[in-house]
Length: 124
Image (cartoon, rainbow, N blue to C red):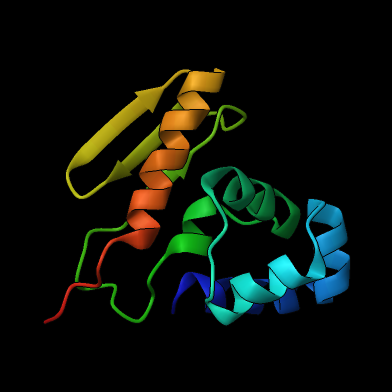
């Protein structure tokens, strides 16, 4: 599954309409529709917000469930999580990055997620 299909599936599972979810996120309905259509993707901050609203971990939104054998799972841990000790943590593909929950930390976290979202799919 792609991010777009994950967002759509999780939104429906949570019982939100596109309008309701867009309002909760503070984005236009057109933006949410483009995310669900796969035309654009939310940035890391929006992924974290989506995860909070949909009550799922952020990695469930970005997980490629159809090609899960192509890469190691990616995990995000946020400052509110008991395991994070107040840090933003990105784990996956043999890498663990801990960032402070500052503006710069969130900026770097956004870049990590955007690079993950926009990288070419691995073919096997």
